[in-house]
Length: 416
Image (cartoon, rainbow, N blue to C red; front, side, top):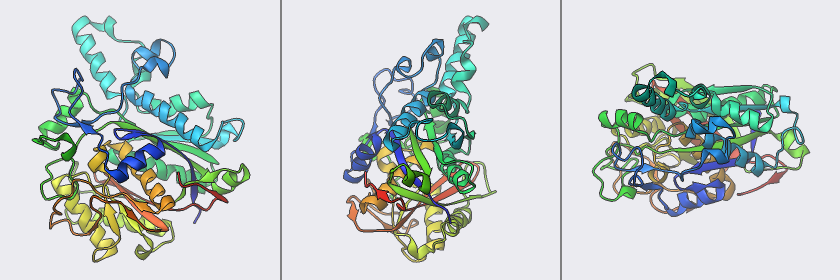
């Protein structure tokens, strides 16, 4: 078993930016959910969302491309720069550029595509920007990060829906285990709060609705939950070979120790009701980490607050851990569902939970649905020392990814 040290964290979410601000919010219950800001493009499509501050693309991307570059690229660039700075890594100075990889998940710049299609319909073919493709292609966040930092090793984009970010981290661990990289920048970036994307979820009745208080709308495992809250954000982690981190005197937050991936082969949008695919995914992650269910001290659940998803995950957790099992929480109660980005933010939260000995609870969990049994953490963070945590991400198409986070094995350690 070869782990990867997490030496850098970059987060930009509805609850804040950076490891310290985000983890504090998740522990004290600072919600990032609100009604759409006045004039927001998604204002007619969602009652509540998880929004990040607007960023002028020209401050991040230079040249004419800034006029059409999608928010997913901007968020990816910002969080990758934050993660590398947090790790104290300058590519070319601290690591061979050919020994650095970049893996980024997400659906790509769909908002930009929508706006350009509308422009063409209104003004004709000459309205389409020649920079359109570099704004919308799913590989552009990874490509732009590589260009910005001179990364010349393995690069890829991941498209496994809401499991994309977790899959990107798993791929980063695989690269390090295989000896193909010393450092991997990996994560996800999503900006789904635009009309067409939001409308498809709304028309499918998947979104939380009819909540007078927007901060109460996301209710994982709660009896009154009625859908998830669509959110935007980005998260990037720097994974590093432990010996490489030690050689440069870097401190690790925690280790990414294991991963598992399975496919339900059941339905394009709904999970297997018995959670069998998710359960097998968790078992594979534990085997990859050379651990048993009894070793896990905390589970950060996928927990989106959908009727079917929460029940299936609870069944999977029961199948793996038996009885109540370890403490479980879903931080999506505060962040909303950032699609592929959620897996990265939740992996970072799990790493910080291990490092700090503090487990963030599920807020808005007032009455546990009897169909979702388990050792739910509710409303108050729990201080307890744990060695290992597990986090789940499940995507449309039945694509499941589980990750195991453990205490840092680097010589130097940091708790955030």
